[in-house]
Amino acid sequence: MSAQVLSARPGDGARAEESLDYPRYSATSAGLATAGYRSAKYTPGQWFANNRAVLDRAAAESASAEQIQRVSKALRAETEATGALLQTDGTRNLGARLQDIHFGKSELERHITRLLADTERLATLKRRLEKALHATEIPFAIATDNLTCRERRSGPDLVQDRVEEELLKEVELIKSIQALLKKTLDQTISQIRLNRNAQQVLECDWSDKQEAYSLDDECGRYRNTSTNTQHHANSATAHHQVCDVDGWMQFTLSNVAQAEREEEASAALCVLCERVLQETAEDLQAQSDAVNKAFTQRCHELTHSKSQLELQLKQVLEQISSQERNISSLQQAVFDKEAPLRVAQSRLHTRAQRPNMELCRDPPQISLLGEVQQISGSVCVLQQQLCEARDSLARLEENRMLLEKDIGCKTHSLLIDREKCIKHRTLYPTVLTLSGY
Image (cartoon, helix red, strand yellow):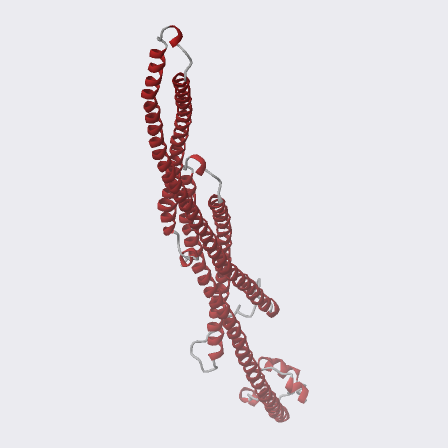
């Protein structure tokens, strides 16, 4: 009976009543006189049975309701505890995730700061390299101008001396330094571009992490009492193109590793640039000192040679003056011999007119002949000496011209080296300028 009551439903009352095996009222008539007053349909037994069935069904439904209430209470407690535990785990995981993101952001910020500093340092070195490269144009112009000016030397002074060798070395050194500075400048520009690319990647990653940190922080602040939460039916579905934690970490580690490589390359390039700027400036200054020393020595040699030539010219001029006086003396001596020669020859001519035996070879005759011979020999000797003196004077004059020409060459060379080249070299840049400052 209880099983039938538990399986019964409110809408099935009619069928339940039909299923009860009530004894039917007998249609026997007690009498025809009371037929119109009989309204009863069931018997007392049927009434008691129906009452018992209702009571039993109510008791069964009450017991079932109490069982469902106990199960529901336990289920509510269990689901509430499970939900609270899961929510606590989710909040804790969000906190751990925030720490991971914060660490990643800190690493990215550190490397971004280092890349910014490296890029700024490289930009400074780039400007120094450009200034140093521009500054080499002045030494190159000075060296080439010195070589061009020294081509205007004349005569024997147009010689390939030590100054010219040092100037040629200086020109070659400047060309090689310019090529080295250009190559280093290109490397610096390329490294600056790589640094900025790496910095952009880190900044994008940092921006993504900053946004993710804000979102996770907002999620961590959600509570059951929060008023800004709402239902999102499709939020639990799997998202496409979602990476795992290892992929997320590997992405950041890869970006940081690339940044570290660029930082190492930047540090090495900075050291290289500093060394190139310092060594090139020192090499140029050393070569400039060598050229200046060669110029000083050459000017000293030219000055000494010019002094010797001027001293020799002074002696030659004195010799010329002396030789001219000697020629005048010889000419006067030859002229002075004409009168005695005329006297002696006139005497011989006059005595040659003596008559007959008076024309004898007497001592006066012998003396006059010896006198004429002696005077004639003296005149010949004097004239020969006069010719030699004139030849010597001509050679002295030629030597004087050569000396004066050589002195003029030395003066011109000194003018070029001292007044033009050395003064022009005073415009040579300093070591600081050549270093790019």
